[in-house]
Length: 213
Ligand SMILES: Nc1ncnc2c1ncn2[C@@H]1O[C@H](COP(=O)(O)OP(=O)(O)OP(=O)(O)O)[C@@H](O)[C@H]1O
Ligand SMILES: [Mg+2]
Image 1 (cartoon, helix red, strand yellow):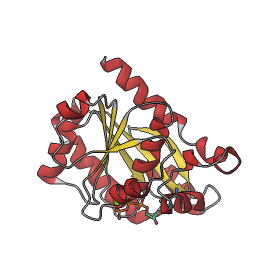
Image 2 (cartoon, helix red, strand yellow):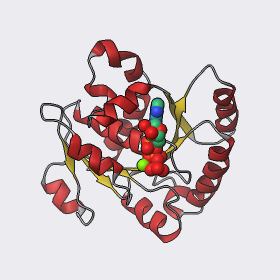
Image 3 (tube, protein in one colour):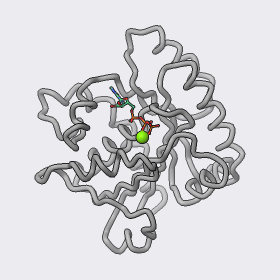
């Protein structure tokens, strides 16, 4: 089982949207996926509870679920959505449990500052510093036509971390979420453009997962 932690300092950067869509993306590739929601708001857990039958299945991981039980259930990917501002011991513990960490960054100066703080804290953790817990960034809610999007590129460029993709800002994410769906559950005519943003994320995770085997 490969565990992916989605974390940001800043609220509203797109963690839950990325966690739920990533889980559904992997499930759509016939992978056994579990979603764990660490946030008291339980947005990802509620999304999963709303998820209609007939779409690729995602297992709801219990808060106390141990990796052994999930592994025994054949889970291949565990996606963890976390509350904004995860830091200190809680962050250390979750990083220890994860195989990779994804940090969404929305295009605003507030997000850049908060992200810089989180990256500095991650870098202080030994498993991250030693490369045993790869960290990658994802531009989130990006509208490529805006000044904010170029500011995002400027912020990301000097960082020595992989920037996997920019997830575009699209109402389809909001509409799909309302129905317990992801953009991968939409018909091709509505989803296809949005799917294009995701392969680099899946490829990065798959290459880490297969290197670990
Ligand atoms: N790519 C996107 N396009 C359009 N809207 C988006 C996108 N990503 C997220 N949103 C919307 O932005 C808001 C915040 O996103 P989300 O809840 O995923 O962020 P979060 O980081 O999980 O927030 P929190 O810190 O509160 O848990 C939501 O209303 C969501 O629907
Ligand atoms: Mg959230």
